[in-house]
Length: 68
Image (cartoon, rainbow, N blue to C red; front, side):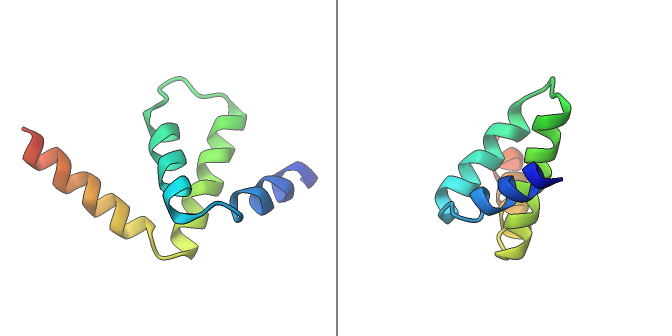
């Protein structure tokens, strides 16, 4: 539990751009272990807290629709 809190604190120090890049990176990994899943969830929560998650998801959907 202590390490999860440490990860939360570490991720909260990221600027928005780095946080979004980490989000993209961890979403692209197909075979994830438990650590990667937890890390991804913490990143998503931080994006949600900063009110960036909805915007990022809409942006990704827009890019996918126009890439086809």
